[in-house]
Length: 166
Image (cartoon, rainbow, N blue to C red; front, side, top):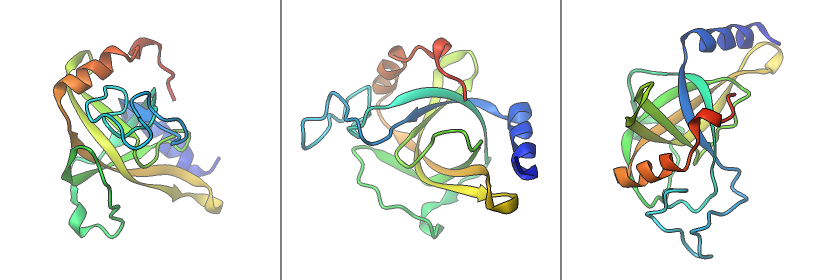
């Protein structure tokens, strides 16, 4: 293991906060997908049409957003919901499966599931350490504006206490 990865992993464990990640491999369609489109009110996929697998991980997030309009890595997305034009940078361990179109659910208070923000991953990039080995992942994510009812219904279906921790 390279030095930068080892130091980042240690930093993430000590100073990271738990994030709930919805990961899709984009091979399995959601039950709401009818062959042409997904239901925009679906609590499983939020209208994207993919099946999501949820897990917990520790990560760090930047405090300030960067404007998508100034980003050279801008990704054009056709979405069934609105997203904030400011993106946030997250830093994850390389073991985390997180890609474009995955979700990050961030609770404002660790034990209070009623205050949260939902983010959509719009760009991902591994950061290289020694010998060209990935040391950590930098993720750009944008806040998603969907109905609170959609997220509450999704949270009801996720057994957070028994999720895998990466």
